[in-house]
Length: 197
Image (cartoon, rainbow, N blue to C red):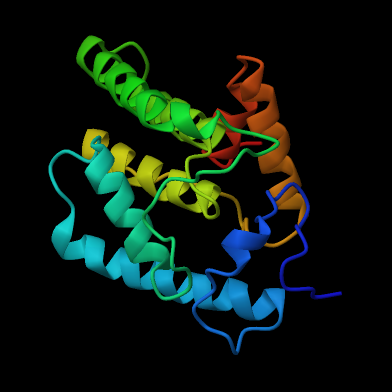
């Protein structure tokens, strides 16, 4: 069944108010929504080719990137969520948690606390855990981690052999690796993003 606003496996459902922010009223199926969002992400990646700042660890850049990814689909693109979720921090905590994450990441980089790969993975996990946006948290977290890793050592991350937006065994393994990282064990997430699991 391809119900537009029914939450997919391990996806966070939108509130009624957030669903009203859909710009493209012709979209009636989840597959159409996924396709439209994917077009926006591709457009944002093209924009990044000429517009990536030297420092991506700024709230303004995070918000601008989310807007670029989803502005053709959602009226609230580029704004932090204002509603509670079954995962993530309380909405009022989002800006400070983002700042703390960026500060931690600077510390990891400056002190070489972890490898470039692990820094990007820990950053990704913490950004997903904060869950700052109504939708697109996994996708923007992966893109931000890719940008961070590329800036650190020029190497890409591997995110599995299939689209992580759609229900698949790859997505299931990714979610399990994130849940294990929630408990402080990053081994599966590191393996997943190197293609060795």
